[in-house]
Length: 239
View (cartoon, rainbow, N blue to C red):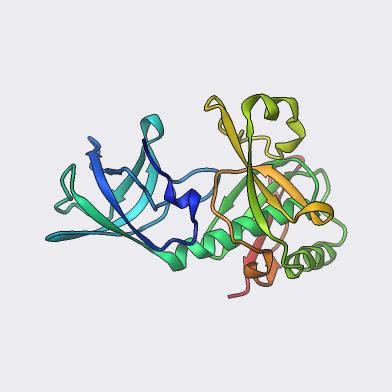
């Protein structure tokens, strides 16, 4: 059974694993993947694998069949054979930027409480598309509200609910284009804040920082019109 280390400890930078298989396309499947696979607008992780007698660079990571996580080598090279013990080395700087941006986008959906039609996470920059007929009258006020939430240093935690509980609470889902994975019996929720200070709770499988202050200050880009009533809001981390 696969153990998803990127989910149990998103701050883990290296970890041992065993090679389960190679895919026909040249990917590597591990039993304890540290690398997050592309999904939910968040890019797959990169890094490297070391093993006795070899090393291979990993360009990205994808979702495979049956819950498998597939590591994609950066270039054709000898791969660790099935059964080999490897040491996963994560490109931490890139992952941490993804974590900061992803958590910031959750807070963006708080200060702009409209249905989300799309989104994308990058290394230091991200965006959400909203079902928004008119551009906000005061984008600077929204940027200030977002940074005010960040500096409150709210805890970011997770809970799990059943598929049935999610179906009974459709308001938890903010995204119109991407639905949380169902059919596995349970769904992961990401919570920002706690008790009376809770500001957000929504299904999400991505990686996040532990507290909002870790995001740092963010700056809005131009709010763009993308369709008749679709607006794109881009934010950038102040690195």
